Length: 122
Length: 210
Image 1 (cartoon, rainbow over the protein chains, first blue to last red):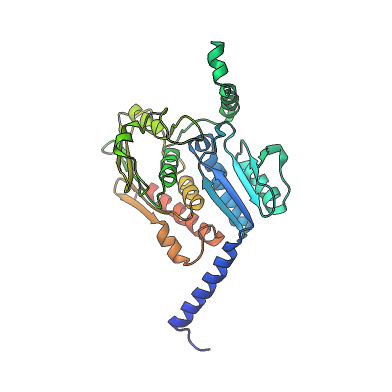
Image 2 (cartoon, rainbow over the protein chains, first blue to last red):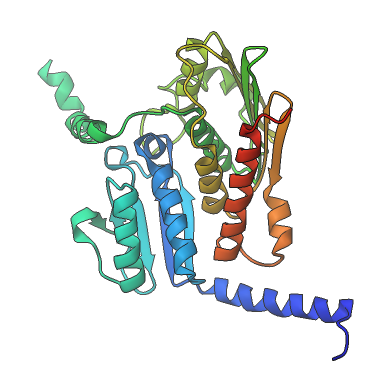
């Protein structure tokens, strides 16, 4: 087999970069963890780390996680918003690591909205 | 009495929420949570680079936390307002607690908090604590704070440096992104690598190999 040259490696790099950027271009589910002072004080960081551990396990490229600031509903923090393609965003309230795991496994991966934890449909 | 409370229709709402939340959750009990909060402020102010440094000098009885961002900065005439919880320019709610809480935490430990800000250049927050003060909150889950920041704000570059006596741990998200060039931080492989770097880094800080 011919030896790989630097140019070959660059091509591989470009190809993968293109593929991944395509994949990231059409994230089908966006998960927002609200992390203002209120969210953080109520435990949003634990929710976020649990979510990332679940993400690492699920190994899905089309799910995007972002943090955002306070949305003005401090009393129901930690809030998590799930926006699936073509569906209304769902805001979950009073989240913790366990609820996050359930919402991720059920709602994000299987599409079953967990109404027990939901605050509102937007 | 009744007129005042009728002017504040949301009071009950807040109180109910507080009672509900307070049963199982506390307030900002770890210094790493303050760091998460203050770094988030900088990002909200448009920063795309945030530098966090923690210096633990037990022998000098000093703990210093520095959070520097390149956000839009605070106009000079407003800097003195920044730790006033009832001053805020935002519109989602009427109080702002983040920096006031950090300042109070530092002052309770014979320390202080300084805000240096240049409009258009960025803001640097320095909080100092007496290391072995009985009221000093533990640093807590710093790794969780970094993961939340890095994964939550994938477009922001973070630099972290942590010194315990003479041992030092440094990481930059730029380096990790370069390792996986072209791939997003939310990629599971990138996240696993990041998690490993943090676990190893903090483990090394704890061991006494001076």
